[in-house]
Length: 288
Image 1 (tube, rainbow, N blue to C red):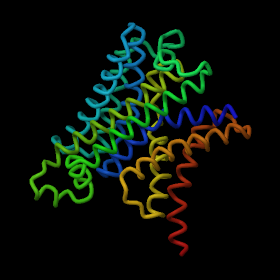
Image 2: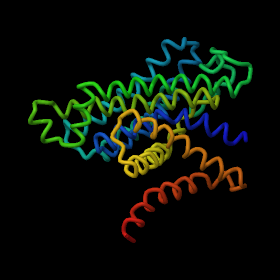
Image 3: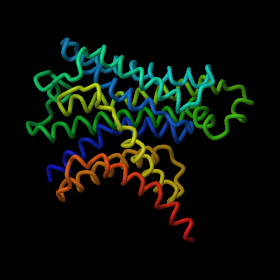
């Protein structure tokens, strides 16, 4: 049971990554690999500021700003320098490794003795339940903000940029600016996941983002499968399904560990699981 409670907590922490991947890949159709670097950046900024005894109202905006700057840089390289989006993301992700190491000062910083979000707010004396209530409130607030943003005129313009760039450009919308802002928002959300995970797990590590993009991608693919199956058009319902996808993804990994699979094989299992959920619908369609 502890496996599944931990999976639920991690699924909620990874909601930011799932939303970020949803915005970059499903709204803008941009394969953004900056995710690995901006996730670690969120954790590193959190760890560095916590060790300097900075208050939470400074740490959270700093994390969001850092992630947004990373995403905006990728967007700028892609749109203004006309470099392939995948390559732009790889370049920024690579550069962020050195940036993260410089910010943190070393490869790993423990945070177990630091006053984190989960120790500063006490709803119940049970540690896991307390973390659950805080994460539910935090993720609900983020979901409401993103859902509201996507329903505004600006959000509709963002969605139209991904659906039909020539059409929205003909209407006078600066699509390059939309992409830069969209990637900034996506990576700010990704950095929030790093912010939560660093505090929930009790350490910040410059390598914590390696392969993390697969978690967000798997979450979004799970949601997309349901969205396409039920032909859902509601933004709010789509966001809730993306959140559910992040939780389901972690439950699958928890089940894998609970049946005795070696933890060293977890990354392999993750890759195979994503391959299955990506390939199965295509194989089913082909067989029909």
